[in-house]
Structure formats: structure tokens, C-alpha cells
Image (cartoon, rainbow, N blue to C red):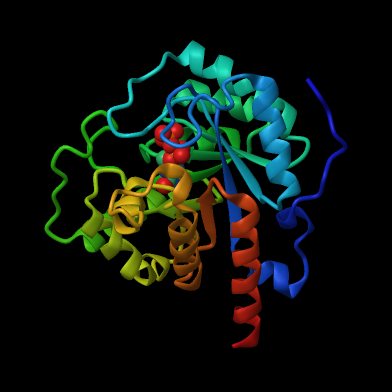
Amino acid sequence: MRKLPPEPSRAAAGTSTLRRMQPLVMGVLNVTPDSFSDGGRYLDSERALERGLEMVQEGADVVDVGGESSRPGAEPVSEAEECRRVLPVIEALATHVRVSVDTVKPAVAEAAVGAGATLVNDISASLWPVAASTGAGWVAMHMQGTPRTMQDDPRYDDVVGEIRSFVLARARQAQEAGVTEVWVDPGIGFGKTTDHNLALLRHLGELVAGGFPVLVGTSRKSFLGRLSPTPVGRMAPVEQRLAASLSTATWAMLAGASMVRVHDVAATVQAATLVGQTELAS
Ligand code: HH2
């Protein structure tokens, strides 16, 4: 596998006031055949590493490596297959940038930390014991249901309040178990209608006020396709969702999100830099 000299990430280099105030950018790297946006593109470890290193060059603070798609209707993969997909990529990338592993399986999370990942990105919000025992950071994301069924008929009485209570309770539980770095994420698109997603973005400040750093992932998600139709009135395809992805990432950062999870790293780093500058000006 090709090796490049280590590049300091903005997070690692970040001691200036500007860098401390600037939201972080997490680049998405799916080593899967079926992810909704980049599925099949980086299934080969060599290509995945190339894309990971490209994201480092583009300024990603964290690269999030996943080996199982969580798109609506996705089929689960075995532990062994998920490890086979992600471990070589994590190992090769971890000397260049902070790596997170996007998994819901305790054994995969543990193996990924062994390979160099330092953050467990957990869409099931249940893996804090792994983070506690390995010393890794942990992201608690909210999801209603499972990827296979989550978009069937999602319902809430109070979407913002319920999700806030859920993730904050999990975050406190993790802290009590000894996890020192805990993130919360409202789980945009995971068992949510377009209106639910918009309400969560509109009221993101309420989650930020909970006191844990907030991660938000809107990048290229289908509600953005529905909300930004093409000139002929069709839902914008995945590759035409940059403007909507960037606007919602910027919205989230201005509302206090400390990190955004994105496919389009270079453009989002520019937006994050701009947000950092406006924070300094105020
Ligand atoms: N979204 C996806 C996957 N993991 N993790 C967090 N913390 N927050 C998110 O919003 C989030 C996530 C879905 O996006 P993607 O990885 O691009 O697609 P797929 O699940 O099809 O692999």
C-alpha cells in the first residue's frame, strides 16, 4: 500500500485561537459496495487509502472509515467482512490523520482501535463500554429503529426534545463509565422525515446547550435532494447536492456544532474556516 509522509491535521496543529474556534471537518470514507453516496468507489483498500489521503490534503481533521452501509434498507454485513474492509485502511491512514471507525459492532470497534482509530462513531449509541475500555472517544448518535426499517414511518411527539434527552442521557452514562471524550449527534436522516430533519437543524442550539460537543451529518442525504430539486423538478441526484450539503453544514456550524461529517471535504473546510473567522470577529 502506498505510504506518504505524515501530514499534520488542523486538529493536531491547532493551537492558535483561530484553529481552536474553528469547527472540525470529518471526511466520510465508506469501504462498502452499497453506501448511498460513495458505495463501491472505495471497496478496494488501495483506492480507499488514496481517497483518505486526498481528504487529509483537503484539510480533514478526522477521517471516518465505515465498512457497513447504514442507508435505509441496507443489509447487515458480518463482523469478519467488516473487519476485512476497514482494518487495513485504518492502519494505513492512522499515521496521517485522526481516524474514527463508523460501526455498531463492539468487536469491530475494538479491532479498529487496535489498528489506530481513536474515535468510535456509533450510530447505535451503545458502544460506550468499548470506548471506556480502550480509551477511545465516542460519538452517540440517535437513530429510531434500524437502518432496514427506519424510514418506514418515523414518528415523534417532540422530535427535538426526545432526541436531545436520548443522546444526553447516553452521553452522561458514557462519562460515568469513564469515557473522557463524548460527542452527541442528532442522527439526521436516521428514522426521520424531512420535517424532523429540518426541526433538528432549526433547534440545533438546544442540543449544543446540553454541554457535549455536537457532530452533525447532513452531507448529500436524501432530504437535501428533495428540498433542492433540479430545474426539471426532479429530486436532485446525490452528485448534485453539494450546495445543499454545504448550506446545512454551515448552518450547523453557526448553530454551534463542533464537527460536521461530510463527503465534500475541501469545500466544507473552506466553510469551516469562514465560520471560524466570523466567530473571531464577533
Ligand atoms: N450518517 C451516515 C453514517 N454515519 N455517523 C454519524 N455520527 N452521523 C451521521 O449523520 C451519519 C453517520 C450515513 O451516511 P454515509 O456514511 O455516507 O452512508 P452509508 O450509511 O450508506 O454508508
